[in-house]
Length: 292
Image (tube, rainbow, N blue to C red; front, side, top):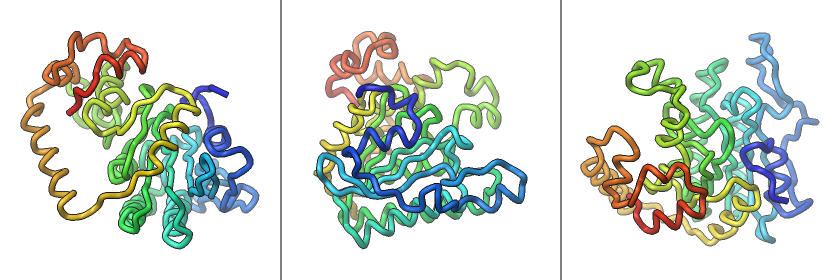
């Protein structure tokens, strides 16, 4: 099967991503654990609250995994949604799987339950760092229609590796939020080419924020995740200081650039204007090792 990761639902992704028949869901829809806040606000809910979590196998390796459903409220995090993800990460500290893999697709915190959602995201961040400190890698897959933004964009940055497709997006504030707060002159969210050049998978890969760039297919994400299973978290003060130094150097080098194409030019890419039009393998061949 080679169907699109971008177009698949969370359950379709999980079923095709893991070894056949290996997924064991925790708190499935039959348990009917859903957000109490949405009911109070007369908003439609979902019996899985927009996320499925559980255990499974990936090429025979025992893992824990979560997949957010972007179709339900843009994959936004509320109290129950966040608690399921925190519980999964805390379970990793007990069962010690070979990895925790997060299939993220989210706009960030659910505004309908903002305070509870913000608390949940902070708890997810803490849990991710605890799992990494315990020596268990946390790997993010990002290729869904809603991207990965808000507090969950920070969560992705805290993980050991991020696998993206060209169609994926990753950032803190989404394009519409930037436009609303800073004006269309700062960022035109209707300019889809600009959006993907700025927060899309290709640019995030060029900046070193995406570990791997893959084609838009579930098997491609699966293959990349399998290759990353041997990743062992490197997480200490020296590593944090090195990361800060890298970010300072990147800011000094590219801080005056107004567009991604300017950054690609400074990286020494020939014909940088052609990069957005290239297929993934052609793009990787063109880029080579020229990354920030």
